[in-house]
Image (cartoon, rainbow, N blue to C red; front, side, top):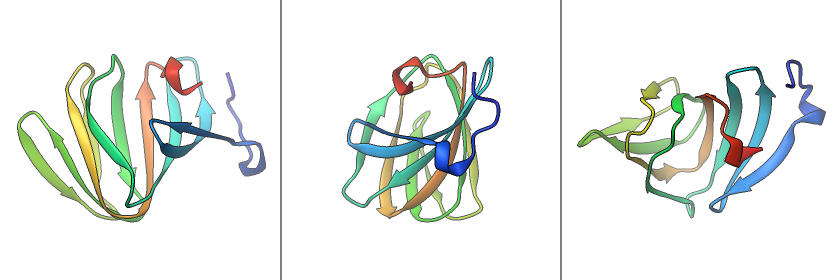
Length: 107
């Protein structure tokens, strides 16, 4: 568990070509900052983690449940666990994601 993480202690990672930073890990949740580039591609996938996010910067098209959502700074979303979803990066930027339970593949 990493309840308090100073920015200089944040762990830089990469998953499927997408750069991100692990910000904090609690008993049941994980907070990450995704660093999306326009060349990134997040194909349809699903995981056993609920995922909630907040768009800091950039523009995105989130697809799940047969619908498409245009996201810009200030927008937020919640994706239920085990639901297929994808993300198209329209404009590079940063997104805060919270996962519950913790994504073991992000550790």
